Length: 239
Image (cartoon, rainbow, N blue to C red; front, side, top):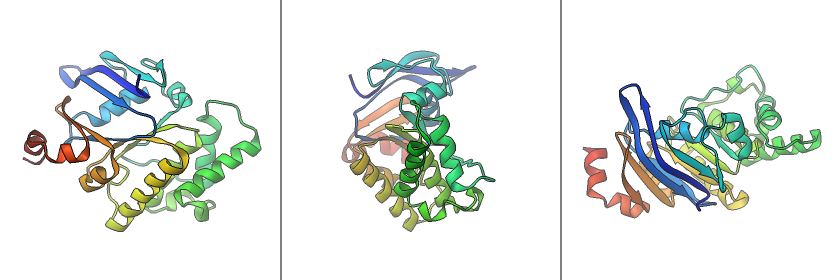
C-alpha cells in the first residue's frame, strides 16, 4: 500500500460533481504534483484528504490506516498537515507565537516545553524565518507569510505536507528560493509533499509525478516529462 492512498473519491455539492472517482497514490518521500485549471477539483481533493470536506464516496488511507471521516485535528495529529491558498496567520501574534500554537495544538504527542521550543526553533530555521521570530506575523511579506505557513505545518510534526499554491503571487526570485527550501526539506527531513500549483514551471521542476484533473476527473498521470508531452493535457489546460 502507498503512503497516501486515495481510492475512488467522489464529491458532490448539490448538483455539482466536484470530484468523480479520483484515484491517487503517493509514496513516502515523494513530491507529488496536482495540476489543473481553476475549478478542476484540486483544492476539493485537498480538503477531502485533510478532513475539511467529507467525500460523497471513496476512501483515504494514510500510512496503512483509513482516515476517511476523521476530523481535521485527528488527521493532522496522524501526520498530515495542509496550507491554504489564502494565508491567514494570527496577524497580531509574533512569528514565533504563530509557530508555537502549531507545536502546542497540532502535535500528535505530548511534548515538554523544551521539546516544544526545539520544534519551534527548528521549524523557523528550516524556512529561513529565525531572524523574524519576534516580529508580528502580519508584518511579514507575502513570501514570508507563505514560509510561516510551512513552518506551522512542520511544527505539528507533520510527515506529509500539502501545499495549496504556496508560490502564487511570488516573484521569480522568491519562487526560486521556495523551490530550494522545499527540495532541502525533503532531502534533510524526509518529508513528503503534495503540491497544488499554477506556476507550471515550478511544479514541473519540483514534482516526481503529477496527476492532472479536469472538471473533477483524472485525465493524466505520470512524470513531468510525460505530462508535458501529453496532447490531451495541452488541449484542456492550455486551450
